[in-house]
Length: 308
Image (cartoon, rainbow, N blue to C red; front, top):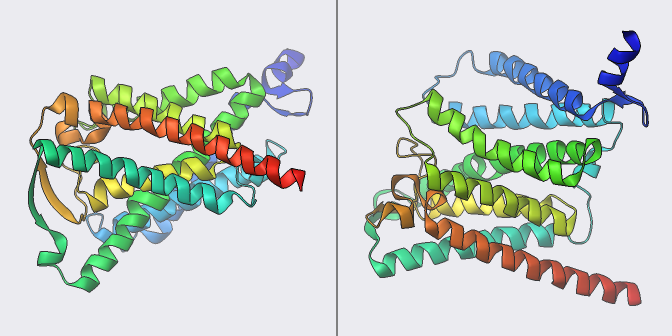
């Protein structure tokens, strides 16, 4: 019985918990850290204030990072940067390319929808707010919608989950699991909060394809910097810059452009934004082609550098 229990829990080489138990332990540790930090810092903060939103994202980021760092070192017996966070000459370029690519794709979506008449522009933030307010709200939005969610999700999904599943099973199962769980989480959120629908059948497809796109960005670089840049840039330009809906119509946030989507929902995503429309699928396909081109460009320069 004891030997059977050891076989179910432990792997032989190296001697450590199996991948599924390591992932479960990390999740419990993250939840515990988040609960502890939430209790410490949120006792005197109104849950409806913008300060609460920022603090919540920062606490989640801290809990995720610390739990994965501890699990990676203590349970996985691996270094933290082996998740795809190595500091190398391509690090900054991958971040900038990913962020710029997301900006280009979202700008293309906005331009096409405006030209066809699928968007109605009603105003701009700088017409009703001071320059200081626009700058501060933009920076806050970049933190809340860009940096924090992209770091937390990429470190968890394309980082800890994918690396452990690749080692414990194989890369194929890792890809299927991480893409599937990324698709299921918004569906669970919709079930729990029916007044704020976040997904439909088309958005489910787009979310799944987005997960595969980000996995591909990790695969061709073997680092998380490119998917981090893409993820942060996509949400920032989608929500803050162009004012498209994110996670349903009841999610309020600052944006530069006041607009209303009037085009066909199956094309534009309607009240759920480009993440739930055919335009999102087209952008992902184009984005994947750009990522392929970028990987070939990196390889060309790597070979040229080695030749010298």
